[in-house]
Image (cartoon, rainbow, N blue to C red; front, side, top):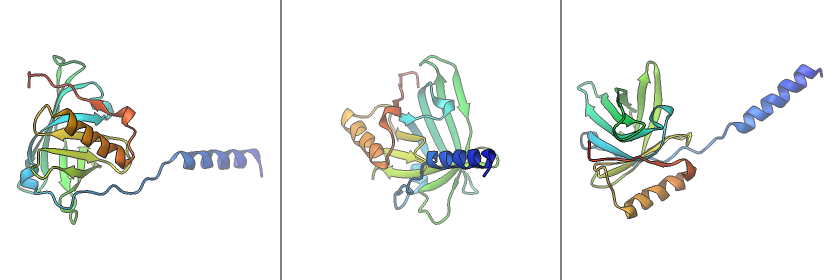
Length: 176
């Protein structure tokens, strides 16, 4: 074996060992899409690069006639009075999932996984997660939840295998 083959083999083995593989996260059995629509306040998240410095983050959903989900994601960047950022990804419900798995498209043709892993019976709070355990969102219908509810939702996120040291509580002010 020459040095290039050995080097390629070693680098390939290192690359494969760095790729974590997690079992798929369980989702809720059924989401009534119409009830899920509306405003959700992002209470905490392991953020994407876009939302790392988000304040007052709100995700709003509206069901389109074609079954897709019109989404509006807004937040103030950097501080509570920072510039308002607005994004309009489109959600696509995956057939046969009880409406609990979506593809969220920010840029065509890529659809990011969006799994509703927890939903309060009264649709007052939810957790959206991903099998890759890279991003997660704890959301509620109100910008503030009790410390007990937050602790319970946080523990649920930990039970999925997420690193809680990455979880960021999103500040909300009365400027919403």
